[in-house]
Every structure is written in structure tokens, then in C-alpha cells.
Length: 428
Image 1 (cartoon, one colour):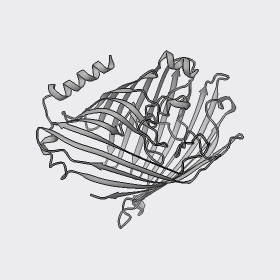
Image 2: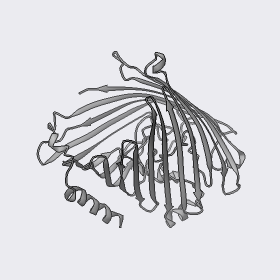
Image 3: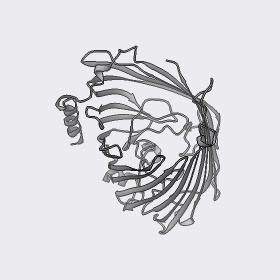
Image 4: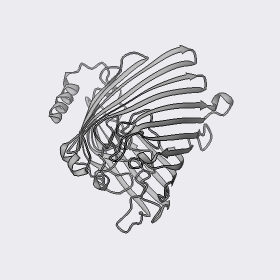
């Protein structure tokens, strides 16, 4: 049924909408609008687990090349997107690799991580007016299917995605993907996904108010719906209050519940964040709540083979209280106090700092109720503003996570450190 709805919406986007915008009319050509970029990334993650669990660490160097052509001129433009990825392991051998949450290099049958990995992908794209159809290997960034680019290499998906921007402020998306490439493994279909259908859109109602609605159907796993509403209240020249609501409803398939050993099939999770910005400072208060009868809580991302996850992208959690912990356990309620500082006002442009304290309670597991967890998050980021190293960024992030004994079935205590150095190079 979802396939039928996607087909109808795609047809409507391509033929029934009277074009208000027309990006294709402004096309300069396949070569003229082309770009080639390379991102050099050095990434290090260390997790010092508590309660007797072995520590995990991975360190690697990556090169991520992306090419995007322009569209040929004419009524229907044709173009090509492509990427090539390579990663070299610098640390994280047998015994130190294998943390599901780090996942730079997948462990082989021998128990050792690969010394390096490489892969490539390409997609062909067609544009009519301001509607684009892309088929092939892609990195979708939608609330119900969002690839993970927060590790050494990014995830990617193979399939078809239609994106329409015919009406100013309105973006519609419809797609179907049939393969998932794990970020830590080679191959186009290393994630175990059968298929996922996605449908939805966002609309900028006014300069201050934007909303989005999306849905997805992961074959034999789950159906998911997402809702977002974001409103910015201008207060003064350099002051504003932003309210951001995000919510998911997930329904697991009966066969997946049975095969995965889950209890229950329903989860609802939402967050509401209020951020007051004044000059270089920002102050955030957020509340997040998970309800439903599924002991998986809010299920997302990961890989179906051997991990019991769902395969819809490692960043498919557009919620306020997602740091090292996602605070997404069954029945969990969490609160956040956050602070951000832009050092540009103090003469250090490009330097920023973010802090968050999140506490969750009321966690339910198969053996207990009323569990708690808490996290202290700190991050410094510096982006070079000029010179030969312009746009090079250094990000230092740490988290201190403590989980109560009652919640040990859901999560584990530890200290985490991440160091990422990204150097983007624009070839043309």
C-alpha cells in the first residue's frame, strides 16, 4: 500500500504541480555545475567502560571523495553523483575493537578488525523543473532514514529518491531503498536491509515557523511516523527563543518481535526543547519521554544481521536528548540543561563550546523498573577561518555516562572521548 502511495505522490510531483520554482531552467550544464570534493578525516574514539566491561578504542584515517555533476540543459536534465571512500586503521586491533557504538572497522571471523577498507558508489539523477529523481547509491538525510556520518566513514543506501521543491518553502520526498552499506564494512549490501519505503515533507509556513511529517516502512521490521514543529520567537536584535518539538511513533512487525525476542511492539517517543539565544550564549532546557510496551524502547539504526537493530540509519533520531546515550529506553523520561558559547565575540572566531547535562529515570527492563542514567557532555570545536588550512575543523568531545544497576540491561556506564579532525578540500 505504501508503494502505491509513493507512486501516486511521485506522479503528482512530476506532472500535477504547476511549477512555481524551476531550477532546471537555470542549469548551466553537466560540466559547468560540477563539483569534486575530498574530506580528509582523522577520527579517534575511546570508551572506558565501567562495571568490569572491557574498554574499546578505535582510531583511523579516512579519505572521502564526492563528485556531483550539474544537469544537462533542456526540459529534463541528467546528471551523476558518485563517491569513493577509503579508511586505514591506526589502532583498535583484536580485543579493543568491536564496540557496536564505535564501529569504525567491522570485526572479521578471526576476531580481528580489517587493516583498511574501501568502497565506492554512484547514482544517476534526473531533474524536471524543481523535482529531482535520483537512482543508485546515496546518503539520504531524512528524519525516518538518515545516514550516519558521525564515525570514520559514512553509511550509504542504494535505491530511488524523489525530491520536489516546486513550491517555495515546500519540500516533498518519496523513495524506496533496497540495500544498506555499513559504515565499517565493504560492499554495497553489508547492512542486512531488505527494503525501506520513505514518504513525507516539510513546509516553511512563515519565516519563524516550520513543520515536517514523515513515514517509513522497513520490510519485515517496523513502520515509523515522525512529526516536527519548530518556531523561532524573535525577541531583540541578537536575542531569540526557539521551541523545537520532535516525535516518533514506531510499530514493530509481529515477525520481528518474535524473531528478535522483543516484548511488545509499540513505542512513542517525543522531545520538546526550548533554546534562548542571546549574543554568543545559548541556554537550552529540554524534556524527552518514551512510552509504549516495547522493551526495545525507540528502535533505530544499526544493522539487522547479528545486532537486532532495524537498519534505517544511525542518525535517525531527531530528538533533543541524544548524545552518547539516546535516553530512549522503555518508559524513560529525561531532562536536559544545555549551554553553548560562540567565542567569536571574544576575538576567537571559529571556536565554539557546548555543554549538556541529561538525566533519565523511570527506565523499565525485563527484570526491573525505575532505573536511571545521567550524562555530562562537553564539546569544543574549532574551524580554521583563513589561510591554507581554511575550513579545517578540530572537534574534541567527551561524555561521562553513569547508569544505575536497575538499568544495566539497557545501557552501560563509561567515559567516552572523541577527537575528530576534518579537512575538506574543494578540488573544483
